[in-house]
Image (cartoon, rainbow, N blue to C red; front, side, top):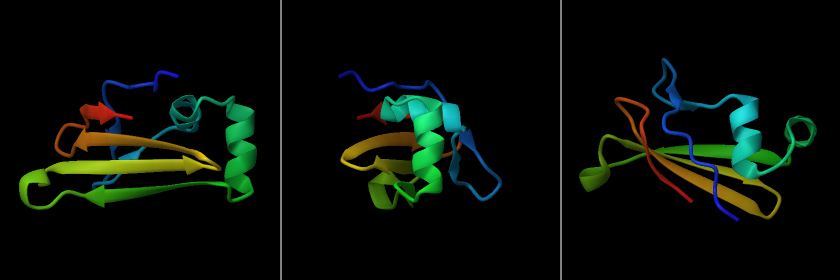
Length: 85
């Protein structure tokens, strides 16, 4: 299955990646209703990591739901998605 790849994501005031529920559901390949139910149940979670050294200026978002994991690597200054897997 091809991973949905947005061109850009929003970077919030804290410098973290901010995704809408619709984009997160699409990344995970599930309907929004299922995403919201699983989010409330604590089955969906995410981690944002800041790059260091040669990866400085990049953010990596890991989004997990059950056995599904999606990763976005993003340019921190612009929100441009560099990689999606």
